[in-house]
Length: 193
Figure (tube, rainbow, N blue to C red):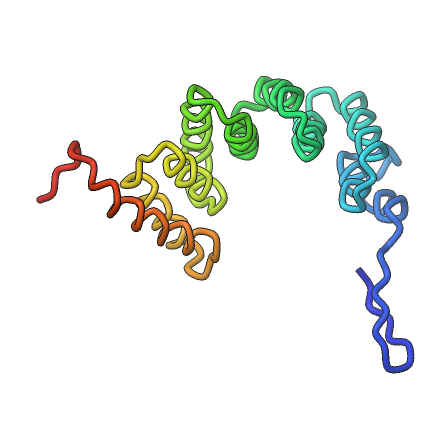
């Protein structure tokens, strides 16, 4: 965004997505996935999807266009479609932690008990690939919290806060998890030394 002072007011203008996309595209003129990202940032979903699909055709071995298509579907609450594209991205690149993080997020949004276990599995896989991810720790903590596994939730909220101590979501959710644990009691399977 560019700030342009006019008189005593400050007018904020948004850059044209097409201009940004062309600046971010590859040197040979073929649009990279960032072409779609420029439109997605402006909430122009159809143009973003077209950009991602074009990039998927131009770069068949790259998992990013497929991942971004899934993100667009998830943003529009089409969770089943999003999951299909995330699984395709996972097939192309099984070592990208963002793929597993997004699979965890989509599993959470589908709100099924089995899906919670799948979300936890995806978040844990993401942590094995990138162990310093605030959003992954927070997602894991929140998923445990939704399952009433307060001790695990508290542990992962603490890990997230270790990475970013002033994170408002994790701070508030940690407080709620502590209150919930106090109301429901501590898990009897936990041994204290």
